[in-house]
Length: 353
Image (cartoon, rainbow, N blue to C red; front, side, top):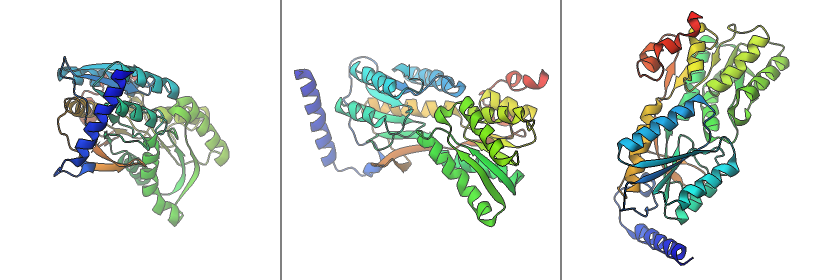
């Protein structure tokens, strides 16, 4: 108990001294919590992940581990697979193990605020990876511009279908990224809606981002509209896959353009065979490298800065937002294949079946 009391006291003194320091960089442009620096042994980073049940997150895990270790640090990775209570418990275990910094991919943007609070009590800074933690004193947020992802989807679809009935298959309502993506989509669609050219006949969130739930949503959209659908925008490639399965069940596959995101292998393969129209590629290797560099630097007590700020309901979080890339049949080879994100033989495997 005495050791814990001393740790909290020392952290409180550190926070007081930091707040009194005259700094030329605005507070919102850099993390506000000073770490308790571990000077013995390599830096240890904890990585709390929402899930490893989707292809995309398996890539994040391996690339982040490689990037951290290449910087001479260590990383301990846990995944809760969509269980909020488990993610909090796993994060508490990481904190108690003496990590130097915590990186978190939240399943629930609000629930994981408790993790940030617990980490800060232990003098550990927190980086929100790809998804923002809401209503918490997060030290840094690093992601892609998710609103831009939605804009890219809607711009691609309105170029193909400037008039007609649209279906929007959203992501999980608990994920802040799903809200940002939807905001981007409807910024583009709104003028078309106001002019009467586009009618959104179905708009629903997809629990836990699962293809099965997305398929159920799409089945409902087809029933509600009597199959009178001209375009589908899905929140990611997994939900796009579920929507496309529903279209296939009703004999509508390849007749209706479908947008997704993440450039999952299955999504890119569907673009090649013509059942999906486009996806949005977020170069995960760039993301993992950037997060690793910032995490290790922060854990060592080095000063880092961010180029943007994102409000999470409690503060303006110092943020780094990377640029996504729209991918269709015309640029698959110059994007996901050239980057080594997917091998050409995998991308074109279904075309050869």
